[in-house]
Length: 480
Image 1 (cartoon, rainbow, N blue to C red):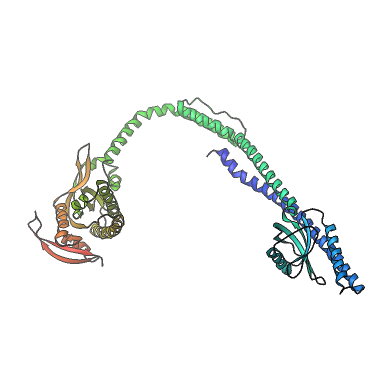
Image 2: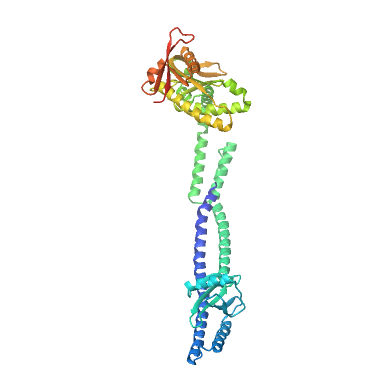
């Protein structure tokens, strides 16, 4: 994001908020005063009409005509005539309702439904002389009212809401237009000012790009203003002077730098042959050691999907691949979580080991805990398989501990950091025994000695493993 745009985004909200705040105060003050004046006009007309009505009633009472229906009617007619003289605009209307909601007096033609009459009569009963707003005669009206007891009239002085608030609405519209125009002008001026202030920085940037493209250190930035930005341009030019002086020294070391770069590329090419990241980290300082093997005691794990051939024959190839990818994703993540190394995939089988290149305090326990979690993940995987309509996977896991040769096997075109030895073969044989004993996880007696205090085990028996002269104790594992 350009600095000029940042300046605009930083300053613009302050300007706009100030404009809106100032306009808001003016709008609120003016609209309040205008509304108050309009309301006082209704109050005045209501007071005038109330006074005139009281005078008419007083005349009736003073002349003993209060019970004379003709005289009472004449007095009410006089009130109606007087009410018509109080209205100035066509939108104004003065009317009265009796207690049943009937219109008994009106200054101008007006009609309203019984529901509307009942509604405003109910409002007036609870809000005497308060400015109210309600629908009357198919129009929204504002009104004030008072109850005249002798006539049993609820007298209303009203005006159409649109006419009553016309001036306020006009002021509001003008205020919005004023704020909008002012904001646009502020944006235009602010953008121009920001560009003016940041022009020296733009020139410095162009100079830097020119130098980068042409490698010509003789180019200098133009100093426009005698301020902090001008000082920056001068400093930049001084830096170019120093760079130009050191250019010859840089050329002196160019050849050595090129050799070092080639050496680094060679090392990285070797490292890219390794899948485990910690292998790269361990041997990065001495790549020559990567070509050597060593004998170490490791924990080896084999896992295999049972009857996978039958499963794969019942599914389209793309579904087989997708299922395997989802299955291996959870299994591999678990191995890595417990600091194991995934050695290879053998079809639907997985081979992993612990103890190299970095040995931990109890690699055997890490391998067993990883295997138990692999079985837990398999349960969740099979739930998803059932939801997708795919067959469930059943696996067997075998773990062994023993001395193996660990190192890089292959040639310059392809290398694998892997392990070989009799202990690897034994782990694979133990995995095969899971089918015979109908167990999901079996370990050898060598692993058992390392983990017996940490997990639940059950002795299966000793068995002769093909390729070995001595029988080996086998244990099933479960969580405590």
